[in-house]
Length: 313
View 1 (cartoon, rainbow, N blue to C red):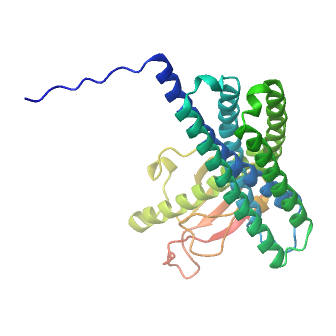
View 2 (cartoon, helix red, strand yellow; view 1 turned 180 degrees about the vertical axis):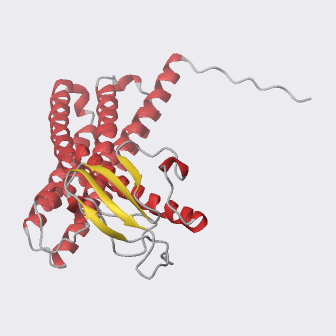
């Protein structure tokens, strides 16, 4: 006969112990995320504000992306880390139980180990960049950032191992406030590097150019069938944004206009419809382009790209 085994509900102390276990695991995870975010923002800002002649033209775009990701990690991970750490520091270790205390020490050891690995990898990359020719102020600043973070992690968790922060709660709070101010400064610096307003303008201008190329492709398809350009843009495209307009000029030409937010060096054509090296130059504001469907020999383009024969500003 099979007996039904009933599971006893957790008592108050056991529930508290399990909660503390998950809190310590959360501290471990958010600590690692905070370290990664710290390096992404710090190294990105150093690379942005301390330029080098070895930088390529695409470095700024890559830096902006990595710094933005680092800022998001710092804001999220450090906020949770601060809250969980404070929750542990104000608790009474005598109520944890033996197994929670041992698991806590194991998690602290894991936190220090992962921190050493992460910081060690960054240190190796920093030294490698130095040996690869990065003989600049960047190397010094990266080294200072790496050593500072390593010292802070070791200092804090060496004292946490012996329950120091439970008997010095005000000191732990002050240190937490100092770390919070450092993170706040990094977030501000990161936001200045990313410059979300400028990024939005950049994306809007690139989308205008993409819309231009979409119109070119659709008009060419329409011309193949009707031997004429469409009277209205909604005949070939639905949902065209308000900052792009279309006007038929003749049987084989039309005009497109767009309201650009940035000057020409920021308007890079990355449209999938482009098979030549053409791109639109502009100043900020409304710009119009007259586009011909028929080439000089009387044939439409075989490569699917209608040439811009005249540009009006």
